Amino acid sequence: MLGLATEVSTNVSGYCRLDDLACRAGVPYLDFTWINAPEVLEQVRKWQPDLLFVVGLSQLVGSELLKIPRLGCIGFHPTWLPQGRGRAPIAWLVLEGRHGAATFFLMDESTDAGPILAQTPFFVSDNDYASDVIAKMEDAIDRALDEWLPRLFAGEWNPVVQNDVEATFYGKRAPEDGLIDWLLPAKTIYALIRAASRPHPGAYTYVDDHKLIIWRAEPESNLHFRGVPGRLLFEDKDRGWLVQTGDGLLWLQEYEFIPGGGGLPKLRVGLRLGYAPQEEIFVLRQRLHVLERRLESIESILKLTDERVRKNNEDFGDCYTP
Image (cartoon, rainbow, N blue to C red; front, top):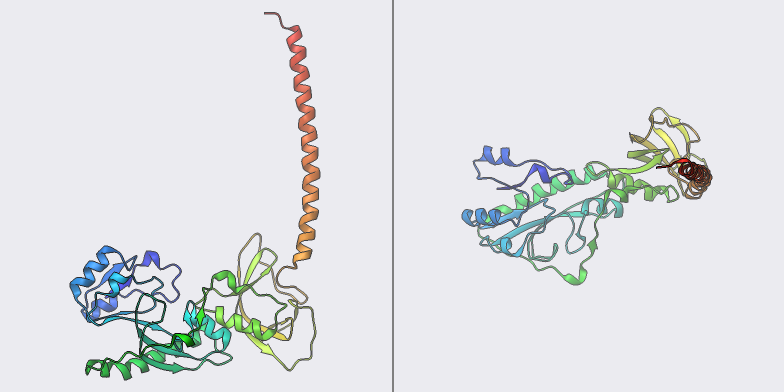
């Protein structure tokens, strides 16, 4: 068994070590920092595997390692391939409200494009968070393996080639993609909050100099309330804070401040979340003008000081006789 080393796991969502599991199962184990390192290739060759399962790895498996197992390397992807190839599939499934599938496929040097060996669907609802989709995916993995592995052990080997014409692709998502634009509709913001929620870094906004992560929210469709997008309208002890969006209302149910400068602010009715760019630019320009005037004053003082020093040096020079 190969396991990603702890020191390179910082940005891996849901990371867990596998050495204890391997030890309990009596399976040889090797930590790695790079899957294609010479020592990894050498160890896998010594093991002489029929199959090598590659699951949850953010590194690309090179051609040399792909060729070592007798039957091949088996990859996993939680979408209904060939649709949804690529990066951050869990977040994209939530954002799009698209159903997924526990898909095991024969890996090649392309991305999620190899022939399919097993594919079991799971359903994503309009209210699922990333953690909910992960739980459904894990259940689908169990069902897929329970159905496929007995056939594999019985000698069945029938990879089905993907139809590349039907392929769609997901691009990389980064923590900064969780920034909330309160001018967007409540439905869009709600999807972003669910997609970016745990174990992902979280959707966020700003309050003064602090980042505010919104972990959970709930749409409001019955209250007839209208406010400025991003402003907190009122608080309910059971439901949280009601905020106006560009179209519709949201309850902010679970949130967390990330400390910035100074003490943590308190949410209050009328507070506007996020930054208003034109207002911020105006304030910054005013501060810039103040700094420019102060700089001019400092430069004038320095110039006057230089002139006095020069004159004193000249006077001293006239009086000095070697």
